[in-house]
Image 1 (cartoon, rainbow, N blue to C red):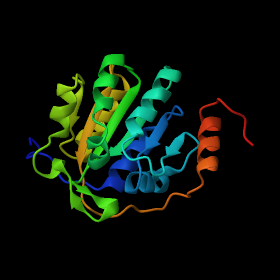
Image 2: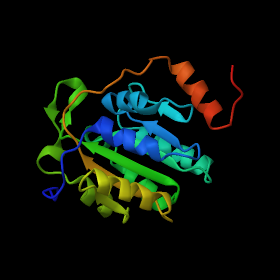
Image 3: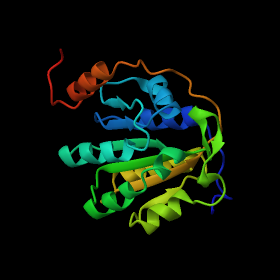
Image 4: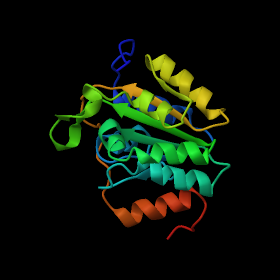
Length: 198
């Protein structure tokens, strides 16, 4: 793995930095567990979609949103363990090339929500190398918080999908998502302007 020059950051801090940059009703898809707990706590908004029990599907869901709304920037937040369960999504995204899709991988090397078992990313799998090998040329490790913000800024004006990987600590999520699938769906669809509020 080529992560020797990357600082271990905090997921809630990184997520808060991302939310602070959103000014145009960008969609944000939060992967299961702590990734969406921190998204909820960092800035609850109608354009956030909080996944429940769908491990590995943040990138495929975000791809669908990006293709359906090509004029809207779409962010997908995913953990390393979840991404490793759905690696085929990377080559599909590289093939379809949605320029409005930005993927952020929170890599702490463990399946945190199920008991901190190590993932392959802890020892042998380099998320950025896998993404680049899948055809996502605009993929990079964030060296530190400032570099993360720089990479997000660059991705927001890129003409191709982007992947940013972040080494994070093992701190638990700050909040807890309200677990109401219908409410989550309806609020998100209203936030994207495709359905009137109930």
